[in-house]
Length: 169
Ligand SMILES: Cc1cc2nc3c(=O)[nH]c(=O)nc-3n(C[C@H](O)[C@H](O)[C@H](O)COP(=O)(O)O)c2cc1C
Image (tube, rainbow, N blue to C red; front, side, top):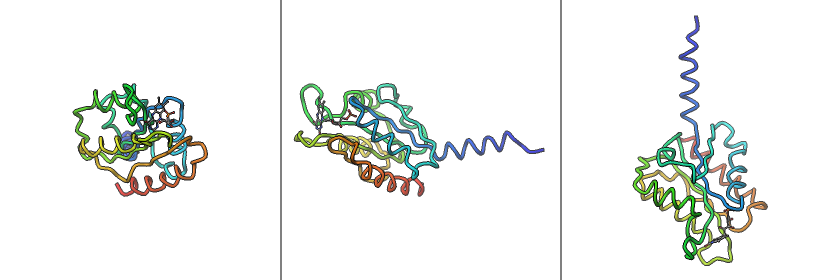
């Protein structure tokens, strides 16, 4: 008789081995649009993708899955421009301030607006977080400057590079 439980457990472990956890913060929906465009692309169709809002994520959530993708707009927290979205800031700079990413394969996306001096600095801040918390950055961050709706090609091109990097894991 076929051992269904082991088949099921192999299936679930292979699925778990190919899962991407996206943690993002958004205010007007731009980051959500970028994340949705990316995660619905055919390039990532073989990956199990989980999405969480930064305000609901715990440090342990950041270790879930095979790879981590962080995405945030740039914000002015406390009147200072060039900061992370406040919800992403609370996660990374407070709750997960001491997290060890333990070589977690990671990538990031930062959004911004060209009218600000620190344009899309969220991308640099996310990348700095990954590198300073012992994450393994899979590729340079995607920066989306201004509204993302007519930048689908740039999002998908980066998604292809991400998919190649993920496939090599
Ligand atoms: C209060 C506020 C502050 C912002 N500060 C910056 C900034 O310092 N640098 C930047 O590049 N963009 C800045 N932006 C623009 C946003 O990062 C940009 O519109 C982004 O696409 C928003 O993404 P979201 O809708 O996912 O939050 C700011 C926007 C607002 C409303």
